[in-house]
Length: 340
Image (tube, rainbow, N blue to C red; front, side):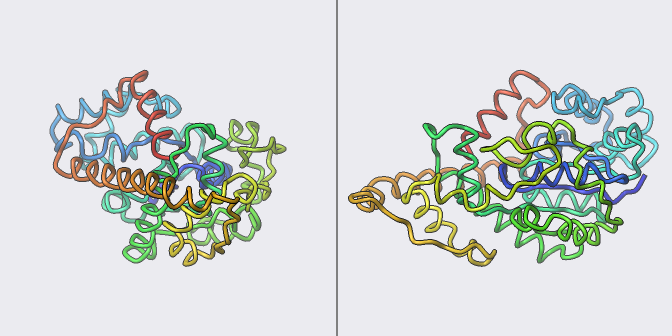
């Protein structure tokens, strides 16, 4: 089994699942979706050379609802884990390797949100790993969030913070790991999928395969509507209709706020700013009400995320990821809270 895994990350509604579906259809690559290994498990159980720590981590991981797709075999994991150097990376790799083995593929990969935050940990455990971070116009991304979670519950400030933090982490990671880290624009992938995939396969040291464009390695995604929250897309088709959708979905105030907070990064990444078309009286309401309120939410999300990272570095206990029902509620709540 190759020890150069592939990781896909970025904020939700940025094309991470599209990239997952494309790579999962490569004949050499077995992909897993949203395992959250790095977010909920890595570093939380102490020294993994100690049997009791390994057993606690193994128990929680094999009882976590997202791991069911990997079909973990605890007895086999116990046998093989101690045949090598004990570490979080070894346990994570064995879970994925067994899954790839069942699919008859020599290489494994994982698609989970927030991966850009854990690049240092990933590349410490897997120095030959390749990390792909998806980026999308934050205005279109927020339009998709609104469609996904409902326009009656908007948290514009949190969405802007999440996008901006992802981009800053991504730029840092590219500078630190130029051979291992690649940022891919959703728009480029959707508009020129074959050319984008050929370039990406060069980065991954894999031959390009036309089978990737069929997305048959991820049938649940392929059949569910594809890469659009707004339209039902034919199986295997990559739609471009969502590009620029923010112009008809978002208000002038929402566009103005996103561009105010994210504008510099947007321009750096090739996203053109537009002049918001305010209705009479809307600009005043934006300046006196919406902007201050959403900026407070922006700051609150940013500080809470930084605090969570500090707590992890100081060894605070993890969320109870092994509790299926509770974990599902926490994940759903957190996803809506951070992005809606």
